Length: 414
Image (cartoon, rainbow, N blue to C red; front, side, top):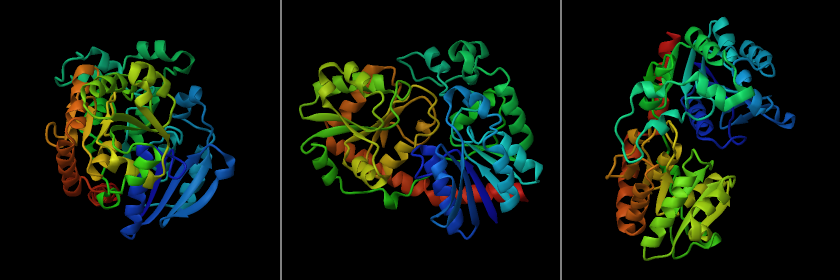
């Protein structure tokens, strides 16, 4: 079988969770003996071309990154559509497996369908119906509560989108996206049940859920050098990784960290790995504890594994529908517990009180208490982390995810 994956980004040109998953699947298909191609975008003409990475042929085509035009480009991107058509003709795959195609555009799915190529679409986020992260429902949820979220709360409000986006608002965007998806996708797959509910609430047909997996055998690393490099010897620390920002929970985490640090009788730090765009706001929110926030910038994979292994606890306190945070998978694989968000699919991985703690991050006191529970008791943190590692080794493996998708692809072709 020849599978062509579509992904807006692909390592090493992208660091996001969806791009990592795309690379895992591509390698998995190739290792099973299937011919595997990837079509992806880059924002520099210098990087355009073809490369072979881990037995996968990667075709890189140019697309500008103009945030103001992304709502339009996600429907039809004139920079990439002609090249996608030519690549489909050249490669003639048996199936297309589309990941995030916000820049490749949903029109690329139409090109595959016109050529009789079945399309499997994996939804990694709610971007098909939401401009950016889906947050509206969070504001309706009681800050102190964790009751189930009614499905209709996920429905986007066009008037609110217009007020929030201004000139970026494209009134036909969601309708055209649904048209492409309804007509051209053979099987739609969400990475979590909660994301699937949100998509279906907005008229996007999503047929099943396949959770992402992780290779636990590659995850553990010695954190000694990481601790020494960042002056963390003798400390306990919370790790907050990837993109920073308010929606990622940076504000709430900084306030909660300050409270937890004051209550723990030991040196503690908050380590931010990834971008530094929101760090100054986090320092302000944490008050006198601002100097205890350590930044590393984006880390190579080997150093990130060391950071995850060295951390006392990993925090993913998003205040949007975070579909299925890959950071939680990587933390568990490294044997580190998580304090994670109630909003989204994290609770489909994390068992509250067994391998992590699930909180409503808008309840800063609850978030602080969860962090303090691990920072004050490293033995508890180790026990929870070990339980998390056993879980991903048993239930959330890359091999299992690859097998599930190959089954879907065969059904789509058949």
